[in-house]
Image (cartoon, rainbow, N blue to C red; front, side, top):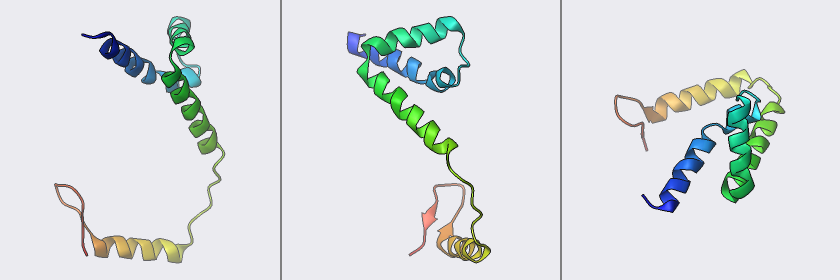
Amino acid sequence: MTSDENDQKHCVAMFEKLSEYIDGELDRASAKEIESHLEVCSACKICLATLKTTVHMCSNISTNPVPEAFSQKLRTLLQENLSVGDGPTVYKR
């Protein structure tokens, strides 16, 4: 295994823990491991910043109900134009 492959696997392992890290759900040792990795890995640092921004944006979204007329029209269009089976969704033209 090359050093790049090893680094990539380590980054993937760190990435899988970033949500828990942001939420403060990791034990101190795991959090410290992520912090140490972030000091030397700009790609993971960018991933963390992007994830934090996404979480912040999602937490500030207001929930406004969709007007019933729009909702009904969307349902009708979906039923008319989508064929859902065991395989991938097929769009009718």
